[in-house]
Amino acid sequence: MTERHNAKAFRMRMREWLAANVPAPSTATGDAAVQRSKAFAKLVFDAGYAGIDVPKKYGGQGLSPVEQQIWREETSQLPVPLAIYDIGLGMCCPIILALGTEEQRERYIRPLIEGSEIWCQLFSEPAAGSDVASLRTRATIDGDTYVINGQKVWTTGAQFCDFGILLARTNPDVPKHRGITMFIVDMKAPGVTVRPLRDMAGGTHFNEVFFDDVRVPVGNVVGEADKGWDAARLLLSFERLAVSGGGSGVEGATSGPLSFRGLTAAARQAGTLVHSATQEGLLDLFLLEHGINTFNQRLTRESAAGIDPGARGSIGKLLKGRREVLAGTLTSRLIGPEAVFDTASAPSRTTATLRSFALPIGGGTNEIQLSIVGERVLGLPREPQADLEIPFRQLDARRRGV
Ligand SMILES: Cc1cc2nc3c(=O)[nH]c(=O)nc-3n(C[C@H](O)[C@H](O)[C@H](O)COP(=O)(O)OP(=O)(O)OC[C@H]3O[C@@H](n4cnc5c(N)ncnc54)[C@H](O)[C@@H]3O)c2cc1C
Image 1 (tube, rainbow, N blue to C red):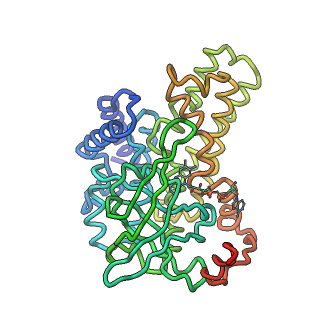
Image 2 (tube, rainbow, N blue to C red):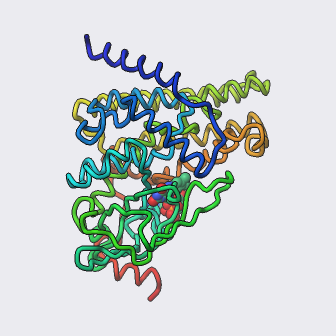
């Protein structure tokens, strides 16, 4: 059988399995939603669809990125309750596979793809978002442990997480991009405090996380000490690929209230499908959806052939962000105020509309993606940066006016 036929048969089998096993959409939140996700993740694992392109020795299926992409495409059309694993699967798993020690891979990968352990990303801080290399969280060595002190913010899902990938400063006497280290942190360790932040959709999607003398074993360093910036850039490139490839939540997928299909149905119902402005907007949405899909398929084929996508995930992330904003704006235009106020009869649409403005910020803003595409994909001149050679301690003191 040819490779194409194999992929087709794989897709058909998966489609059948999903049709029989994906639960009906639910309005569960908090711990109930987490338990529901865990139960479904276990089903996925037992059926052999978890960690599709992860090596078998770590519990995966040992297949190629092509089969992994088929999973993404098929699940993007269904209300699959796996969004809580997006960060673990899209960023933490690939970074541990790429830079982790054998011990780390053996300890963490299997429970991660099985869904029994949930992960978060601890990069952003109150004064370090786009410029994450300005982070102030410190890690000081004490025997065979590091002691972490500082604060992170906007940490998605932290209140439900078992582990996080954290960036901390291990040497403040060198310029800001050097002297950073990446760690695996136990989110239940003494000294970790998670405070949920209420967002405008009414949920607690993200959190503030405080670290007070949190002890992390030396063996939890990912990659090399003080070389965390290289690790962070690699993780961010995984993040952009994962985001543009489509997560597993209801929002932003090719079905759901903000998809081309969902919005066309809403326009038909509202009687606005006949208006040329509506048609134009829907056409733009359709083109963006297909453009993103085609682009992802190309990156997947290249990746299966051993061609590194480099910074090109930023193109997909940028397009996906634009798609979300367009979809959110169109929804408001088509449906009016009910797009954001109808929490009783259309809770998923309300949440999706309000959250449509988050994607162009989370995972790096549109402006940052544009700079990355300009500099690292198109080879345009780099943005001037005056602080590249100044030791962080000096830079930070200057910023705080001391
Ligand atoms: C839904 C959501 C989930 C998130 N989840 C996580 C998470 O799990 N973990 C985590 O670590 N972080 C997370 N974040 C944080 C996110 O990564 C940051 O919000 C983002 O990087 C922007 O940082 P900032 O909010 O500090 O904005 P700033 O960096 O202060 O930016 C403010 C504005 O200035 C612009 N700007 C800044 N620098 C430049 C530049 N050099 N050139 C051009 N324009 C510039 C930005 O584009 C933006 O418009 C999440 C954010 C959102 C919205």
